[in-house]
Image (tube, rainbow, N blue to C red; front, side, top):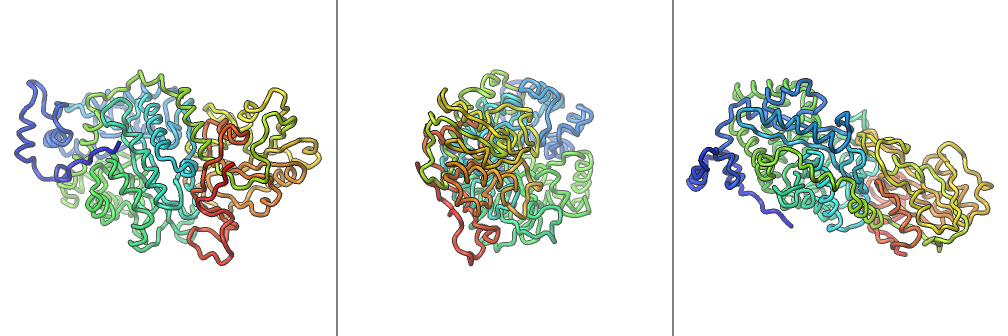
Length: 619
């Protein structure tokens, strides 16, 4: 259901209208207007704003990382408006109850202040509540893009919100609405696809997260990263640490609007609570300081009603002069600033900038009003503490079934020469490849830890593709597994099997560290494919965050399936291999024949891609 937009006039710095003023005067005896849940979020925010000191206002604009809070009383001392858990940052008791206890403790500090303004607590729940062991982990966005199923993605948002709210978190930094144009980018898997219409369609996840604002398990969503982060230019001279991440998007504004803005227009229409600004630049200007795009376009032209948040220490990149960075970011339109490790410095600096007149008080008031409206809208004042009854939904069978369905729909069949579906009563099956029995590789980045890690001891639970295969076949079928991660597979080992399933691909990574100049299969994966496919009928399954270069190996394959990063429910892959479900996924990215065809839009002098955008066989 689309959520109604808030009225633009209520978000301005103008005083209350006569009608609004009258509404605030109809207060319940003994209850201040901002405490009266019968009033609108706008009226409540206007009343509370008028009661705040400058220190309290700037505190509301400050977000700190939980690990940087050395003294919990700092939450009250600095009037902090928000905390977050970065990737892999959680309590020592990393359970839903441990999270709830931690966050409720933080909230008690916030509620001890004179005006009792509760915290927003944010986390990167980007494919399920991925920081917390035992959470249901769904396919990353690249796989969801292949489903083209807006209702499914909305349901995933709703299920994720239930698990997130069960831990006390009330805000997710998701969905990523980037339109990735260069698959060398390490965040490609966070993109729904290479065309804006896919991210626009699947922005339905916002309505899933937010539900009906103010009801149980309704959490704030974040559309990110505004704007153009998927279009950065491959240039090591300007960004030597990363090839593409946090780089420069070099486009005319016409092309920027055509390719990268539409998903944010859709997010605004759904009433998204927050928008996160990108680390990247547009034509050399850091987005964190781009007033035209943040204030004129996002807030003005698109009519965005929520609040704008920075990325992790993103304002630090504007200038070596910290004071200049702070005033540039706030004056550009940032409302809340993620200063994970040094919140006192930010607070002191912004206070000095306001006092000196370099940041207008009206800009501060606009930012704080936007933040407070969302706190009222989502019922954070009425329900600041964790709803512990939601713990029953955490990692539930219902959520796992939804994740399995998402895996099934995300699979793309790229080649099939009569090998699929495999009979469940096949006498002898061989399974091998680096990603057949590796839960960590299957989950990818942003899974318990920020970068993720390989192996099955990754701190959470799930079903590997190998386990899914073993569960799918008949009791008479013999399934052998050869671990190619540490052993070379030879054709002699493969002879005698009826079918070989080779699961290959990438190891986990997240932003920056996933940037690659070459996307060929590893030598060991290539050897496994060659050995198996030269000896028996074979199915190759890729587990990866983007298309890989496998043109030379393709002729040997009997079948090829792109499984992306399927998440915790590996049975969904086996369901399609053995015919329990049909292949319905379509490529959300064109699959290059060689690295010479990267990025998207590069002149195709060498011919068409190996598989075009939207390609997918059905069997």
